[in-house]
Length: 236
Image 1 (spheres, one colour):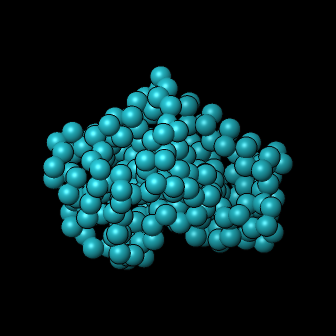
Image 2 (cartoon, helix red, strand yellow):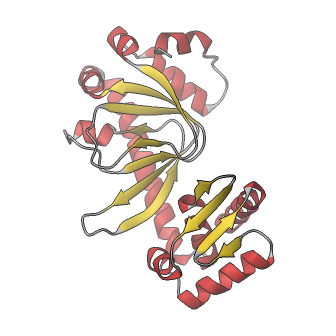
Image 3 (cartoon, one colour):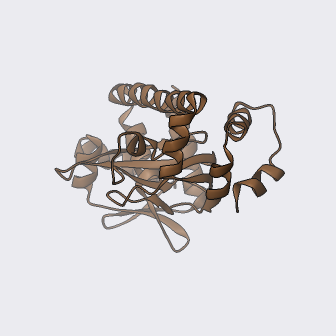
């Protein structure tokens, strides 16, 4: 769908998210509207793959997405979930990086504006208001992630384990599966192996997950129960 078609259907609602979308639409020059599109992704679809060419910038209209930071050493920083009204790929464009620095996947069904990278850079050069909007979004994410990362050090290890399961499990047929050794899970979460096994037993006893060898599996009901427990632990 082209952006002009989306604009015709857009209804301004009394929410911060809707107001931010309206703000962005109002400042769009015609060359952006002509050359950009509205695109949808399904849960687990890859939006950007690390090291691919930086060809577009994304603005998230609906849904949330996962950022996976991989370093040259092979270490993977614990993935983080971000939400709508965020720009993706803008850091690479501003810094003139020719390749994407992180893998980005859809955490749920997602709808986005997709801008050609060169056009978006030109737009930023021309519009102080857009630059300010981008800085606000990037700053919000930076400080939010710093706060969450800091809290993660002192939060319950069960919270960290459930967060790891939810963010790393993949769909296999009609269920979710985390297929990695307990040793790898321990290294990625920093949770002691014995504590890890205790958390797995507790989740199994509560019928949230099942295990087959190294694989942790759960269905949609299990996903909902895990997510509710994750939220409860997060808000303690």
